[in-house]
Length: 197
Image (cartoon, rainbow, N blue to C red; front, side, top):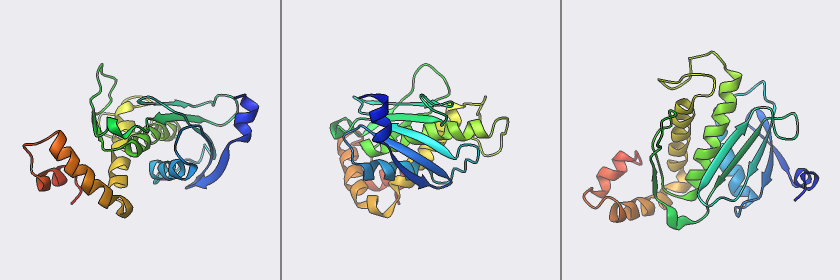
């Protein structure tokens, strides 16, 4: 796909305080991706970035990147991708090699995508709030703190998990996690652990 064709295929919407321009090349519908973007950006106010380009690409597992100066234009660019293969979930993400990343649990591919998007949108917020400690996670260091971005992503994933339209789906998923990964825990203990009740 040429760059000109990709720019024509972008859809634009105002999400919170920012106008988002979306290029969805994944297997997900645009409605699913917009829902993930809304969950990932709720609560972030960015005045220096009135426009942000978002690209959601297909991925075998997951990936995400934030480009502060954009790729082919003046707007910052967030690129994210998460697999749509539900057999890979639930997945306990245990980062290795340092870098300040935090462990996370994803029950399905939508949670994984929300986590990737939230992490990268938080980097855009961090760029706007350089040198400011207030509002960041404990232990955050530097302009682009992965610890702070991961803490924000975990919070947004939990908000999505607790949303009314998802509770029924997650009750079934939690029962599956109990049977598959944690046979020694009771269902109610795991719900409390995941803060579903």
